[in-house]
Length: 302
Image 1 (cartoon, rainbow, N blue to C red):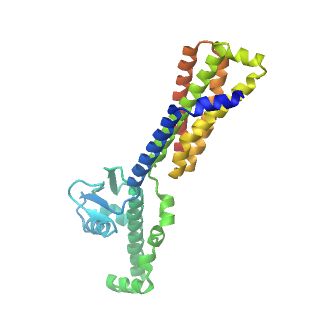
Image 2 (image 1 turned 120 degrees about the vertical axis):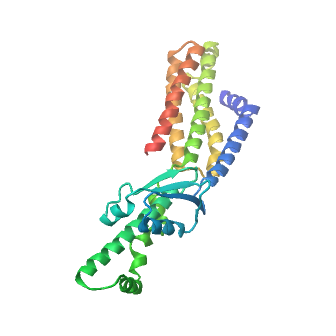
Image 3 (image 1 turned 180 degrees about the vertical axis):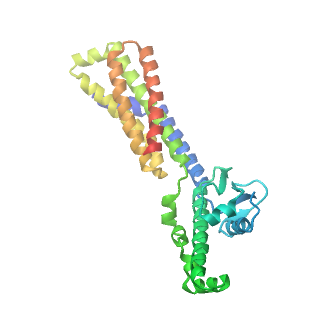
């Protein structure tokens, strides 16, 4: 009987309804935001050629020939600076620091473009280096060399074919998924606040003597505690469901649920040790900050 009345009072009210609406609206907006950050079909690219060599000019042309790349002198998504000494170092096979990259927008997919450029440079180096090696043994012109390799399609197959494979390319791309961090922060913030509010309500039941009266009527304290945990879990589920609907990263749910129950456990321990409601709220909210930071840390490193 106690459980039924508790569930009715806690779950059938305007605040739970508002919580569901806010969660649904936020997850919907985040889903749209996430899609806007997905790998775009095109990039506006600004290139500064500090080397001014024949090879650097050819590299600029090569970047401009990539699908989805538009070379511009105006506002761009990414800026490449071809450093002085580019050709000299490239011929030697020294690739470190050849091109400086400056990302100027929040578009994802920049690392994929960087991978394509880097792979193209390496394939070009192998292509030229192979010619130098052959020329030491045979008196062959570069034109004949190009024609010979064109017949075997080697020029198009050196490394580049694997980068054009989207599944492989996505695996080596390292763009940060901003949506997952925003979703996790929201879920942790709301779920931990649910935990705090539920524990504070239980503290009031204890301090006002209601818990003592429940014990006299045959309701054990552990049953009351389990009720509070169950109700907090249901409220947390209401918050998470819209994010499941919009297919948020599973890792976000795992972290959020794990930290929610860890925090709820700590709050119940604090409630048992703290008589003052104000002190309980202060300490619980201080612990919440630690859990928010912990969630971001776990999401970043795992």
